[in-house]
Image (cartoon, rainbow, N blue to C red):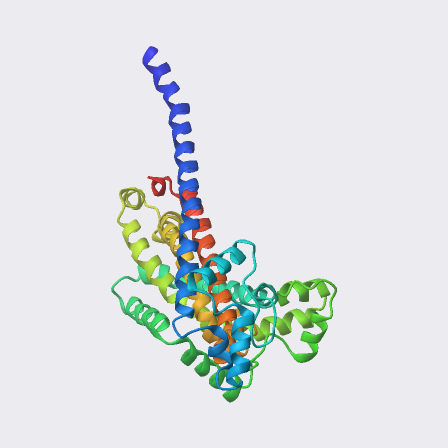
Length: 358
């Protein structure tokens, strides 16, 4: 009896240690965001200064030397580099990323105005990646070492090896030019876009605004315009998901509990979809943070190819204009988003699989 009581007493203690381990894990991951962002801000700042000050990079050769020198002095770019860095770091800590040189907007305003479009595209691309990568990964695992598996693996390799801009151009050529069934560019038709922008307090996410508008035609138009950009960006991640699911499902199918279920007469379909499927999703959750970084970097090419006016599209515009103040602010904000996303994914992974905490 004493032994049973002692064992029962151990359960709350073990549970408390588990909770303590989880909170300690979350705290450590949260604190790691600070040096990560600090290093990224420093690296981006120094890289932007390799070619000189931003005003000379953007306006050099288009202004008389005296006027250019005055602009540089007014902006404070003739001060020592360490003073400029500390001043910029102080602004970042207060949410001030500077003012663009080409259109004189606050960088934070640019991020708010165009960030919703990139967020919407990233969500569409993730949906495409899940719809393609997970089912086909299951099929590849179930048909292991057969021709179906070989075809799917080759498709996955092509998916994440093909340049996004090339895939986007091919999709436009096939579905927009040859077949004429999908729009070639933009987030919505001109009339729908004007209607959405005229709404009171628009979110900037067209699908949400179209639903709020209560117009089925607007919802359909927004989704219709999103198909090609979402495919171009989502296929890249779908290939990675397919390989991950295949590898992990194959490993899970060889586990002892699956073998025991098979010996009891459980069907292969049930073993695959009910027992081997869920454990195989854990690695996908852990790499979603990395995929967010890939999606945001891929958004630059995707948005430029399809004229999807988001952060990636604007980053390309500012790069062409050599507006390094805007480029610096956008790159830093993207880095912050990636760091925070990785933190959230780490927490979710720890909640799903306690082994991650140790």
